[in-house]
Image 1: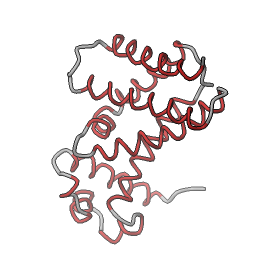
Image 2: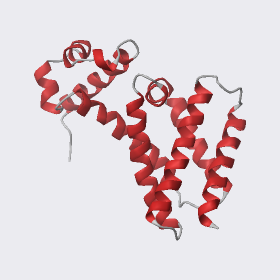
Image 3: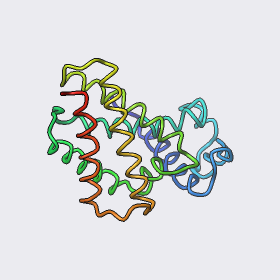
Image 4: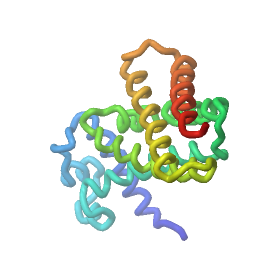
Length: 188
């Protein structure tokens, strides 16, 4: 199925406008009018694609969640620390490449509700992968996935804000150790 190039351009213009506005505009101040004026599109065009600002922002949640899940589940999930390290490298590369915006989504206090939505969506998908890989219950898999995802985002916030003086390798080691030790309590 091909997507009309006008739809792609509109989507890109709106996303770029939101990226620009989010740096200086609180969520309460963000309006369809501001977004469409910044994007250089008509408000009616916005409403052809989205029901509301929240509906539009959910596209970012979906985009980031889908990419994180793809990176996390690209290889079969195993109970070894090396696998966690490879996942970390993939995630760190994603955030380095899209640092400004994805980091903003995951670390902004103003838009923290987006981060929670991403965490929840990724935890659901990740728990399915854990449940398939190990003989644990759905609830245990969801707890493990939620724990691991929240560790990643919490440590990433601390690292990004300079709250901890860790090198990338030290950051990776802490994360792998935390996730591995937490997961072990369910898998033994």
